Image (cartoon, rainbow, N blue to C red; front, side, top):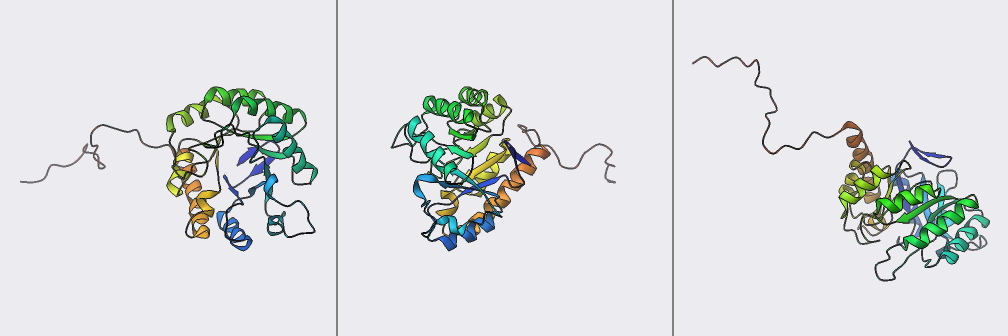
Length: 256
């Protein structure tokens, strides 16, 4: 069970709602993913419910909405967008993004920490998108973040887990959930993230950008489950040389 504030999720996969061919494809992919939480960009969705919006295609009885502050480059802008999402009735959850560089889309963690503190004071359940720095993760935890969401690789790059050691160190450094966000390209990447001990994975492009988003969504669902099971089971120790699968002790010598 993944716990975020007062919310409990059976699925450890969180999915985005952008970049799909159409709303119907998005609906099918969400269903195939088995996700219970979906993220929506407040700045990129029409909050005017008299007009067609992707919100019309997300059943609030099936999914918990996670508004995000995608496209924000300042604390003031991110806080304003978070407030706008809550005022529109989306949620008091917020996936907090404060981007520091337009080319790499890397987070500005100094400003992110300031925005986290402010939104926590206002009663938001803050889920900050951050880098792979264990020290910053600890500071976000101390600031009241409900989880930390380190990138595995640049947003939308599909490069997989580039920073395996840092992700492991980050997981060890905090007590709140760690949800790997950004950079996943295929199912094996999601499985690796979970095997490292991550509590969940968030993705959008890896599913929406696949040749068959619905099949990829199902693959990601299975990968997250398999990776978590493998982590809980505990992998065998890596060894330099071979080790026979069948024990040699007690083997009766062959009759010559």
